[in-house]
Every structure is written in structure tokens, then in C-alpha cells.
Length: 298
Image (cartoon, rainbow, N blue to C red; front, side):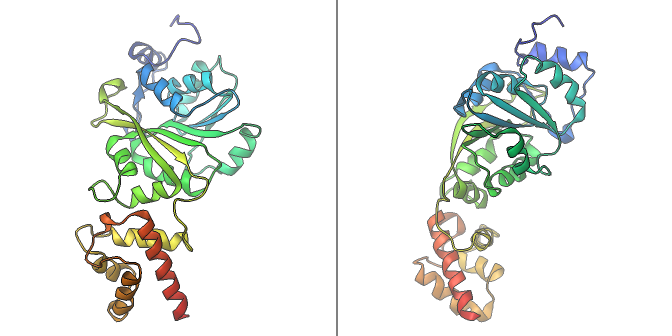
């Protein structure tokens, strides 16, 4: 390989050359699909509105295609890679970017508060930007959101179907507990749809780039977050069932059915509605009313 050290990784030929040079074999179990389209990588990087005062956490850098573009735009890049076989490749492709640091580990097990304190002190803002492995998209996203990290944006390439669920509005089949969980913490916006043809190897589905703008405070006020999400999950447990039936199965019993009906009436929610018809504000109202009822029983 005679390419200049700063040559872009994100071309089909260079990606194949790097894989061959290092004798690297892609692991399906780790969801390894390397992006080879520079335009899409630039779209991902620009969606996070980076500058040289800002930091970026990348998850799953692979051979460094996106990492390069992030390092050109941001003042500090920390890339967390679970696959130790990729570390020598990243050392090579990121050699021209001393402000890019690779951390070997599983982001689901890392202490992110400690990582923040070590690497991002002094940054004017930090975003997560990543091409996420599809098989762990939801656990990673929920860890980032629930940990309430000081983030500006989360910009990720994920499976198109999952992106559409995250951004879905009430009433459609895509809308569910994931939509509410994401929108409680952030404002989602699908930035681009990406075909399988720009990956090596090609996945079987379309991908999408979604940007989440983190909220300063949650979308709605709830007295008990754990109960709020418990109510949401209960109402979506059986999508074809009514709210009344799902709540009876999940949070109430036959003896407390009159109390449940009274709570729904107090909230102005028809018990024969289904979970996908309720907005996040209605779920908040319902959860707060259930909490008030439980407090009365004590």
C-alpha cells in the first residue's frame, strides 16, 4: 500500500487493501460492515455540528473510515473498539491524528462517566457519532440516554427500521415503547437513508442515519421515571389489546379494575384505545395518576 497516510479509508479499494494487508476476517457476530462511501461519512460527521473545540465519542470505529472524518472536524476523538484485532489497523489509519484515541473495550461495560472525565475535560461540547452494530443498537442507545451524559447530539447509522421506530409519531405501526423512550430524552431526526451497496460486506437491509438532539430536560414531567417506563411497556405488551386489557395484565388485577377505570377516566383516556394511539404526554399523565393512586394505598 503506497497511499499517503491521510488518504481516506472510505473507498471500496482501500478498504479491501487494508483488510488483505492485515489478513483481517470480518466477524458476523460483531456486526462488522465497513462503510465505503465518503459522501455518507461526511454527512454523518457534519450532522453532529463539530468544530475544533468539541469532542466526539465513536463506538465501533472498525478500520477508522468514520474516525478519520471525525478527527478532521473535532478537537478530540475517542473511539471505543471491542475487537482487539482491529487495534493495529486503527493505529495505522489514525497515525496522522494524534488527537484521536482508541480505547479497547465494550461500551456497554465501560464506565462512561470516568471516560468523560479522563478524555473530554475542556471540550465545549461532546457528541456520540457512530456506525453502530445492528445487534446491539438498542442497548447502546439506551445506555447513552439513561446515563444522562452531557451530550449535545447522538448521530448514528443504524438499521432503517429501528431509526423509523425511534422517530415515529403516535398512530402508526412503527410507534412503540422505543419511540417513547428515545423521545423522552431527545428530539430524533432521520438525516439520510443508506442502501446496502455502500458497505463491505453488504447487509441485508437498508440503513439510516439518525440524529438525536439531547433535551436539557425530559419531554414530559414524570414523578417516577421507572414507573413511567413500566406503564409504557405494559401498554405495548400486546399491541392488539386495549389499554384496559394490557394494564390489567401488567399493572393491575381484577380486584383493582375499578381503580384503573377511575384513573383512565381522570386522565381523559378511553380504556378501549390501544397503546400506539397515546402521545408521550398522555403516558406521563397516566403514570403520575397511577403513582398517586399507589401512594393512597400506603
